[in-house]
Image 1 (tube, helix red, strand yellow):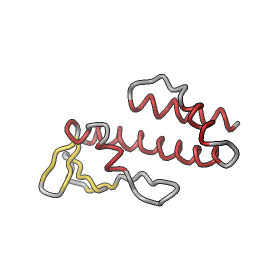
Image 2 (image 1 turned 180 degrees about the vertical axis):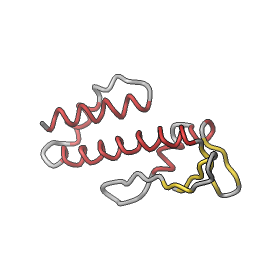
Image 3 (image 1 turned 45 degrees about the vertical axis):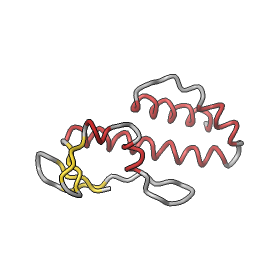
Image 4 (image 1 turned 60 degrees about the horizontal axis):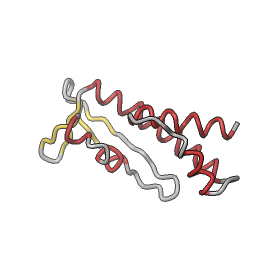
Length: 111
């Protein structure tokens, strides 16, 4: 997904790849949070975002991708029910905190 940084008009790309299908689902990921109505502005076919919001999304998406990779690794030796039980321990409410807690739980389970 390409976005344009409001302050610089620089075009950047955001991506979040599904490990099973190889599909970039970043637009769905962002859209499901309601962020398109908050942080992004539509201009024709383009999405505009501030540098600060872009930087925040880059960090969250990178951590989610790392978590997705850990999930795939976890599923090599555990069942999907065990993964569900593990991720059910997440108590955070904010997206950034959810992603961080998910990553930490998976990393601890794999150590």
